[in-house]
Image (tube, rainbow, N blue to C red; front, side):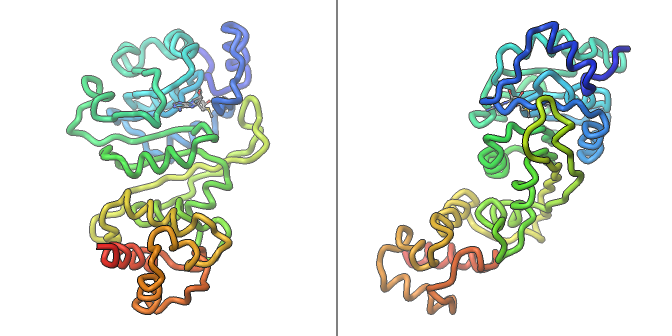
Length: 296
Ligand code: SAM
């Protein structure tokens, strides 16, 4: 019955025992605020028996609470000093079960994950998973793209990130935060802001505050038909490659032929001088369709 890892006292004890140095280049900021951690677990709605993928368990602040809430946790981590710490410091028995039956860690860059292969033998492939993470901030955007473009069968992604990135996920057209990440996410997912977390809840404290966002897949009939998701996301990224330039300029790489670009602007009734950030999502869907049609 130790005090939770997500407290300054216990975290300091672990840091001293194992000579842990939070590695800045790996985005290591450990949560030391039990309320914030429990807020994440609650936002994710973890129930006994849930299969949870955690990205970057660190020294286990969040992992511990996911386990205590009844989750079975599979974790991706890249810091090879952490598995030993986690195996020693996480509760050895959880509701009568051995830690090894409830927790598995692999040393692997999550951006290189092969979910079907990695999870085999630990998770029931017939059941969906929930992804929960206090993300390493230097790769937040690629991780989100990777997850939503993957074939992983998930019911929700509950992710802590910099507030600024959370704002991008929820952004409206015309705002500075609106861009490829907004569009990739909003065409597929519902975005709910669950809680904001002060930078002092971390050790070491980052410069910026954070937010926890819950992304839930939209139902088939609520979802816009974008064709091949990865291709659509790529076309949108191309449209925003120089956000301050006009749509006409940004489309030059996708449609080098001026006649075809003019055709697109006429067909979609668009001003070639508009900037990408002014266009609603529905227009990007049409641009993508038109490009596929014209470049056939
Ligand atoms: N979950 C812990 C917590 O809340 O205290 C630690 C979160 S810390 C912000 C991010 C974690 O992600 C670190 O443990 C870091 O080593 C790990 N990490 C960094 N890059 C990673 C990658 N490419 N794949 C998997 N984990 C990574």
